[in-house]
Amino acid sequence: MPRLTIHHKTEYRYARPVAFGEHRIMLRPRVGHDLRLLSDDLRIEPEPMRLRWIHDVFGNSVAIANFDERSDRLAFTWRATVEHNPAEEFALTPDDAAYFYPFLYDPDEFPDLRQFITPQYSDPNGELSAWARQFLDAESPTPTFKILSQMTHGICASFAYRSRHEHGTQHPLDTLQTGSGTCRDYALLMIEALRQLGVAARFVSGYLFVPSNGEEGHLGGGSTHAWVQVYLPSAGWIEFDPTNGIVGTRDLIRVAVARDPRQAIPLHGTYLGSADAFLGMDVAIQVVSDDEEAIEA
Image (cartoon, rainbow, N blue to C red; front, top):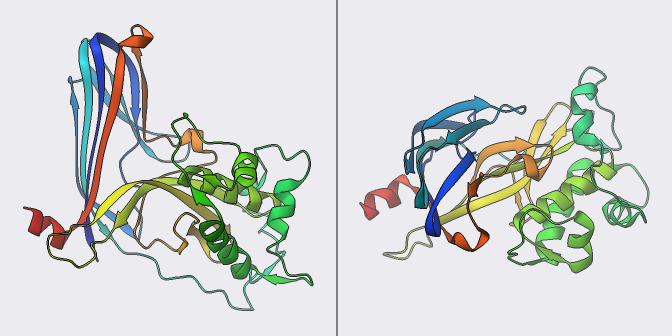
């Protein structure tokens, strides 16, 4: 089972000492049969007055920090080592309930899936619905995997990745109309398009592992990342990364799942002081394999 180590540091800088409000930290990997957490360490400077861990409504691990000290900097340093066993690409057979679209969810599961099936964003002129339906065959039924795979690879191939400085995730129609966005924007576009088709989909926040290119002295890298989970009868939650065209969990380290991107922000909080006190934020992330860790050491 491949072993990966995540190094993540976020530092906020201020022109003068400020007070800090509550900060919520969502960086701990979400463990399961395909992901095992071996060790983790969270360090915060200045040290918080109180640090507690909770499980949110989706079962994600969230650390909540409260402070009683002023400072001109606030730094969060996170290190975690995981064993990652990427799931093989799923395969449905013609006997499976979801092999063809449209399909029906089990009546016992539907009440729990309803929030992930119901569209959350407006589509007044049906643009998003029309875009989603272009992935259906003219004569139904359409193989479900074909829809999901073509949508994943279609976004990857047709949309331009664009970093944005604005907070939050843009409306799916903005992503569709501009043909550009970030990984969070792409994930939300695909989620809402699938919901327009009545398919259960949810948002995933985590890390992307970028393997080394094999050249001497070149280590792999990584970044925070976002992708999609789709629920299919008999197959369960399956992962799709429309930014990189990945089907399954290869190179994806899951941290949190949510109905909406606003519920899965890796790190957020407030400070008490004037707006001009904030100087900037520095983020450094590296995800390395065992072999690369040994070389670096």
